[in-house]
Image (tube, rainbow, N blue to C red; front, top):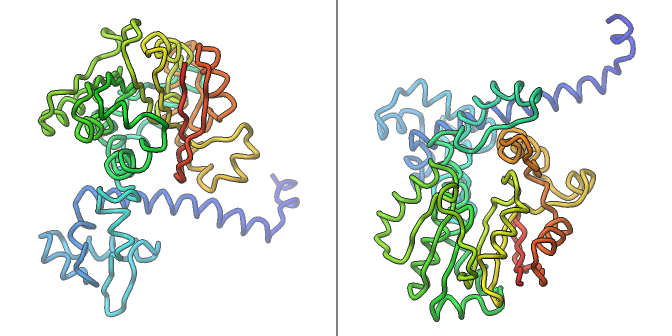
Length: 360
């Protein structure tokens, strides 16, 4: 221990401490964002201009002292703007990210699953020993809701007007009337948005998560659509009769224990002239490239351990690609091995996702 102390550079030690406790500070601040989202505090502040803790307490009926400390914490983290005289302001940009779920930048949903994700960490030492991870249903119903809320703003604001028209021939098929399958459909938001926009088509969602399928059923009831059906893929898998004109997989291939098998199933389910639209995390082939080019690399690798890679290893022989595991070269190789002949990148500037149009 004495020898270690003698080798420590004091200046580097201070920098390392700032880094470590900055990381801890981010985790603690994330908990404050979670509380603000859960108790609708951001919603209460939206459009109100600067507010004091007394004013926020009067509006929400909550304890002023607790609200004051919460405001101070988020003000110190620069997530609320301090305007003086004890008042804090949720800026229009803050409203977009933390309140307005119809804005493409909204990210509050990712915080709603935070407690469950952190609780999973208590079970991961065993996974490190056995090599077998935990599937998405281990996150519970709150996990399914959080994933849905995290992805839904894109589906509701950008998928139909910005993404689908960039795939040659896709919109025309949907307008005429197509058979569509969404594999890994989650809570069904993407499928429901397509069904609203292109009502002549018929839509089928497939997933193995019981909690996600419960959300999908609830969302479908609320939407009141009759051209959407959801399937538990563990008992009602994709048919192998080449019936589907369009297949989509949104942010799910890297989570699967056996994505190669799913790709082969998609090949058997899609028409010879069909279109498969893939959305997956924007990844590079090496660790060095991911760190250099992705400012969220640390967040994504941590998410992989807690969620994505864990899901991909939730069976003993799982591939375990991880959050940043499906880079374009690998995606192209795997789709070719599954029997697809064409692999094209779809040009859509998205901060986290890459998009590919794949054809037989």
